[in-house]
Image (cartoon, rainbow, N blue to C red; front, side, top):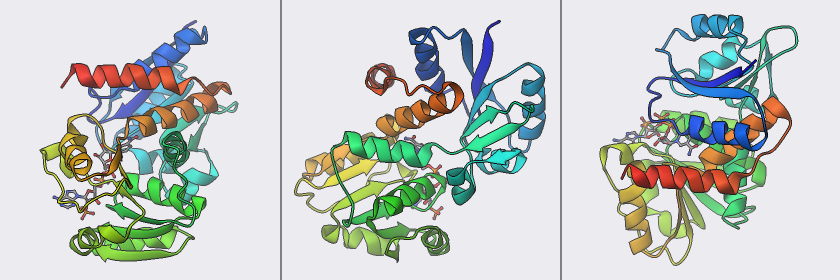
Length: 271
Ligand code: NDP
């Protein structure tokens, strides 16, 4: 019987995850169907009960449900516990859900694919939202020296508590004036979704990694490239976190290069 998988979020129609996972199912001869599932905030528990009854084996979880997914799970992986949020659920043998978080290792793999080693380097993280937590944890585990810059300082301070490597907190405005001192910049701000950009100094071939992609990253990455930064967008992180989810479900790490090509083509087709 065809097994059911999917991603739960709201909104969800934009998600590239069905494209990624259904292709991997075909590549690996797995009889399964991966769907986008729109579930409003506060309704994850009902959705999980219904999906368990339908025999669902695994799920990805995105906004606004990542914290609820951790809370509602029966078992939690180490990274999900440290981040306080889960993006992957795996059905357990006893019929419950095990929560994992693949955003942090996904970001680490995406960095590795850029051939940059940020151990001991000064890395500025712009933003302190949910995705910044995964980025900060990943960079901290890699041994980078972090500067977290955020409009709401209290959120940057809370994020600094999570990391174990040296960490400074700045307001976003202060941080943007000090980017000349960074070895690399990771932008996790969501401002690109409304077309906003950033005023960046000269990059001198340093890495500017925007974890957004498509239209949400266009203006900012264009500005970074014009100013001489080595740029990367968030599609490789998206594909890498998906690959680790697939590994949790099937014990196989799938091919990320072909998935990245498919995603890039899909994003370009909508621009
Ligand atoms: P959050 O809403 O949790 O965080 C948004 C961040 O942007 C906060 O730091 C917020 O600051 C800041 N921000 C928003 N508006 C403004 C503004 N007008 N001026 C200054 N700062 C602002 O979002 P996420 O962390 O979940 O996502 C961030 C981005 O990362 C999104 O574009 C998302 O699409 C992308 N993403 C990519 C992933 C991938 O796999 N590639 C995975 C997850 C997310 P404040 O705290 O002050 O509100």
